[in-house]
Image (cartoon, rainbow, N blue to C red; front, top):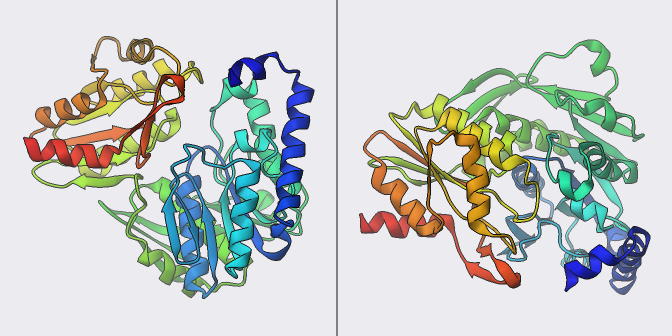
Amino acid sequence: MKEFIKKLSPVFFLDTYHFILAFLGALIYRFPSKNIKIIGVTGTNGKSTTVHLITKILETAGFRVATLSSISFKINKKEWPNTLRMTMPGRLQIQKFLRQAVDSKCQYAVLEVTSEGIKQYRHKFINFEVAVFTNLTPEHIEAHGSFENYKRAKGKLFRATKNIHVINIEDENKEYFLKFPAKEKYGFGIKKQESGIKNKFNKTLEAKEIKLRENSASFIIHNSLFNIHLMGSFNLYNALAAICVGLSQDVSLKICQRALERVTGIPGRMELVISKPFKVFVDYAFTPNALEKVYRVIRENFNPKKMICVFGSCGGGRDKWKRPVLGKIAAQYCDEIIITNEDPYDENPMEIVEQVAQGTQGKAKKILDRREAIREALKLAKQGDTVVITGKGCEPSICVAGGKRIPWDDRKVTREEFKKL
């Protein structure tokens, strides 16, 4: 019924509704962002990890911090999982969260900011101190109408943030985000940049002497050696973004270094669930770009005898274009492919599976029951193999027809099925 009303309502009416609700939320909770520094992180991939790393840096520096991400909510020492299945909560909820953070004497709030949230004015009446851009690849195209509209939605966070911008200097969309004015601009990357682009920033961070290991990485910034317990070059970008935020808040490199070295993993992000006799990783990746990065990192870091991949396509009714693309990527990297159910919502789950399978050129098994699919992957795995289960990470449920949610955790189910072997 809700979706039917949305389709019938004019865009202007919906925009006005969202804007008024955003104002009411701020008014009811007394405009809490006036009394706390807000850091907003946006982009296609890496938002949750970057939010987590920024939080650790600020906490290590002695600040009281509130955090809001797709993984969890946190106000100082109190943390609880995000069970909303919304990365960025609604307007009333987000203002209530910020009020609670202020009342708990938090000095910072680090928020994961989504394009859908921006589209619905959830970012309005929040005074952002820092805006962070991780990267941009095609996603939510059907919801926004085009990639350009998706990019413009992300840009609205930077238009609203007047003080500090932190931008991935290597992303091909950097110039778009650079055009928004700010008092200070920080750029980050792992490749040497020409002075022309570097001159557009107040400060740029370039990781040097990078060493990628099986479960960690190291790099040097301004003669300081950083060791992080996160794998893959993509996590270097997340770490650099977090360091930029720290430096913008007068946190020293030494404190940033100490903070990042304490991080031993991010829930549901390249999380090693089983280590012997074969490895099993669970990851949130559900975009083509993220999925390819995960597969490539596992291939390069662990060189498995055989890679067995379990995945589907998140978000029934959305971004149908990427389904065969995901299948094609899996066919390129995986030895065994099992396509399964993820979050079909009101769409026929088997139709989603079939559309993903189109990209695999007949290489995939189709098992609709996600538990059964995970069980099959574990049965196929031998010593020296690696199983990769993607699309949900640490999400606590599967969303099915009629707004129902089935309690779920890929990690828990994997451990349960492994014990039965």
